[in-house]
Image (cartoon, rainbow, N blue to C red; front, side, top):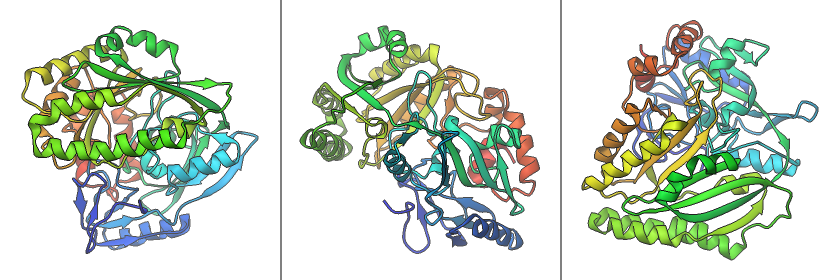
Length: 439
């Protein structure tokens, strides 16, 4: 994938294909000075400003009719500090490049989401996360940030410098400024052993607390229309390294997860009645396997089959009830859901608008193959999530607004007050931010 999802004749499109925009102009700054200059010039011309990553958000969080900032020249590692165990990277650096470069230096992030295509700033600004008992979101691993604000000035923030900006800007939704560089905590490269195995739905739900307690990183997929789940447990390991063999990796990643999956979804989209049978076959296709490798090779996978997604964070204690309600709803409806439901967890953090802010959370993600009608399914799922005080992922589909978020997030007012201070003229505003943060 290039620096960003894109379309013809000046139209920008996201990865899921459900959002497009026609910016008045584009800029591709190669330094923080060029970025600040582009923001200042946009202000002079009365244009709103949005930075866009690889377009992996399903919401219109990055859409603009003003200046679109593309980050593909703002990449690379600025500095590795081995004494404080941090790495500072330019905002447009893809996660894949960061992970490969860190591994070469014998270093690693503590946790990762499940894809590496996004830019670091796009990933953290929307609250991208993996799964973890003790660590989860990528933003929670940030130790300092550099931000170009609405007047073109460059602001650095950390727990010791501009701490109120740091509390909010780690997941800033692009509302406080354009992130130009990020400093992450890193640690010496380690090994993870992944244990993947099928497990019946009832057992996963009955044993959920135990599975969560006993594993550093636990997640599972449930295939709607079946009683089948596929579980994944990742734990630190003393080794030896035992990666998935090349043939095994190809069968699992390319053939099953992308090739056959694409074909099955095309059939399901054309003939919805086949979906339950496809789901049963898919649930059976994923077999048990154990392997040991460096973190990013265990945490992440390749996703080529395009979809749209909604994901909500619910209190961790409520997740099994939420899942039971979701299953009952699907079983009683005439919905045909071809994509598995993904379940992950995160510990509470102290980031103002993090979906895990102030509470231990579990994430429930529902997906639909791109081009398949998803509204009925997502609306019914969202009703269940919101009944349990669910907080939607900022980069995934939802229908919530500022009034709702003011009730859901105890520190919501803190964020909007800071936004008034840093961006009084709403230089970084767009329709999505108007809806979720208020005018």
